[in-house]
Length: 213
View 1 (cartoon, one colour):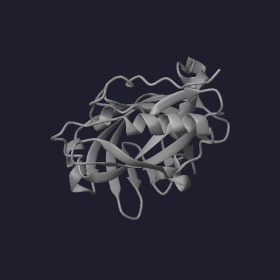
View 2 (view 1 turned 90 degrees about the vertical axis):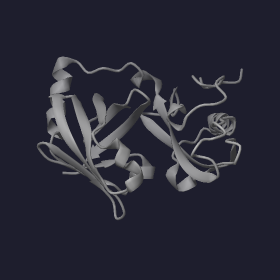
View 3 (view 1 turned 45 degrees about the horizontal axis):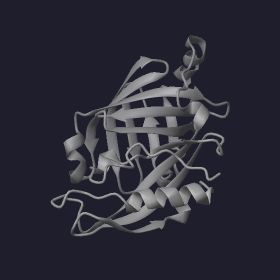
View 4 (view 1 turned 45 degrees about the vertical axis):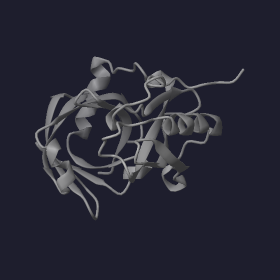
């Protein structure tokens, strides 16, 4: 029997960039693995030229990868979309199915206090060059070209919000003042945690962060 991964938006031909399904729950990964694709949008809003970016891809199941490529190729945008006539990168997350409804108990949640301050990195290879600096009320994310500053507010040891305060690129200025809601859903033994983030109820992602010091 051929295995298939479930696409929530498979039957919606015209969607916005933020509606593309990026999280898939599978049984063949320990925590989270990643697939990064390059794709272009033509003048009519149709997706073409979908290719894998190997250096930013850690997921190995070719059958599921081909399903995602087919899904990505089938996505169309509005004929007047600003995304037309350009190329982009998009990362898809393959997440252990046990994490789908994972929640920490009250005692497990207390371990989240160790992540309130320090230096961190994203385990997503696409963003591995970003350093996260977290202080009492401020979080800074930067690499050699970009820098983002957020106000961080902890609602509990495993729940915090990030409010965009400063961005280095003009195209992201519309995000200033917007809030990302982040819940820590699992804490691993090696200084990593799994989080689920929600921006504007449109961009909901699961990822992994590692504390460096």
